[in-house]
Length: 339
Image (cartoon, one colour):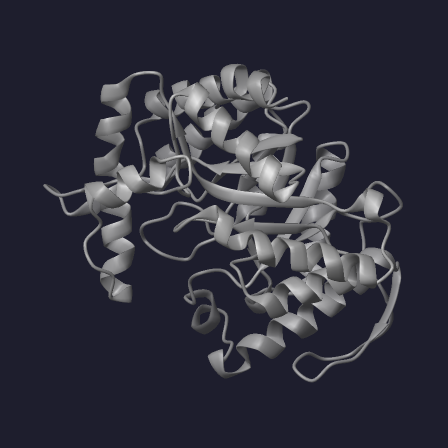
């Protein structure tokens, strides 16, 4: 099973100055962290896309390209590419270029995303939310499998025998994963298309997702895809420290982020009881010492049969040295117990 780390580039908010941390400093810290991931044997790094003041990264492919130049083995993925508000031709071109820079290490996670800021920013209507994604996914998959593309849809101009370059390694084909938050229709679509699946489990109890993942497996087989090529991942909030006081202190980082997002979504303030409940073996937070985190990942493998786990590790913007230690423990202690 592969182990990865995901990030959104969370920016710490300074209550005194009323400003977020400098994005340039944060991005340079991310690159330092990805270099360490590669050194300690992490399999995958996934970089998210946001268009908000509280996140540093709006262009994952740029950060991943910079990461490609300072790493050797780690796979470099978007986590996620908000495909509904992206141009599929440009998405393929960017990630094919990243693939060539990294010698075949690029991957794309496509999803709708959990925020909607990119729609008005790029001139798209939320009334076309579903249709935009379906149509653009169809085009992206066609570009990925065919060098000369003829395609037509309702929301984008057609393509008539047009070529898309450069082509990625592996005969032009990039690994394209479908990232979902738990919608059965999205899971069904991924299964029918034979796409690898990554499920975001960031709250509640992971066991509640078992029927959804079993549904994916059932429909994947029913569609006639090769079961030996089936890939399933989960993406969950993760933080590792062998010091109890550090784990306890991380609650304040986590709460600050949950409350900042929750304020715009009508959530009640995040509590210590929620934090401790999520950290329990049945909960969705992979936060604790190396043994606790490894045990929970092994439990996920047992109940879901996953082939990849992505630990989302920068929620609430922990300090760089704290992040570096968490990455080190994840690569050296957690991985040894899982693999």
